[in-house]
Length: 214
Image (cartoon, rainbow, N blue to C red; front, side, top):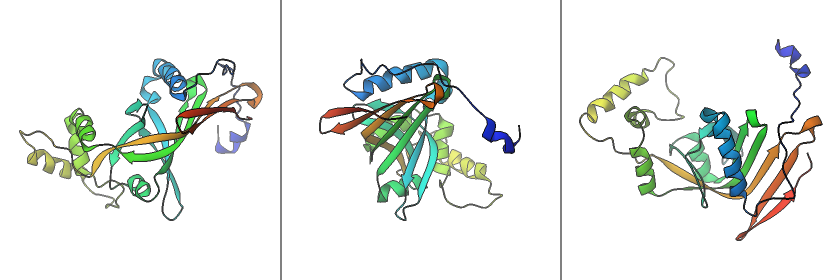
């Protein structure tokens, strides 16, 4: 199919629906339920989500990152603190997360405040990464412009030599963020584009539930 024909692509959503008469009081309960289903049907993609940030110049930017933890405090991911996303967060730490699980016809949209986790927690996660990934964190100046023919593996080999026979310590410019949730919307695809949408909004220690029009 050519790009000219994309206007004719149609898909009917009909796999599930939200039971608005039996909603949990806390959104993480519903998130865990949906996430467990996503892990069952597509483990490799279940943890991937779109992270959107806005720069100090009010320019939005989105990329796919991996979820590495969910607690009452929020959603955790890891990155280079000198990357574009981290520079955006430094100026404006209100971010958006978007999970889309195609096989379930489900989507979860989250807004919240991204806050650096403790150095100890970043150390703990970094220590459990494969050694190759640890060396990669040292080797890449993430988001910086490099030569088209830059030999990245040469830099990896440099750090392999520096850490030969030693534990690879976490670089200080690499670590985690926890996104403290302010809103979380659950979207379930439904026939005829009459999708189910459920919005939780945090109000101090409580959560307000609202249904949104499709």
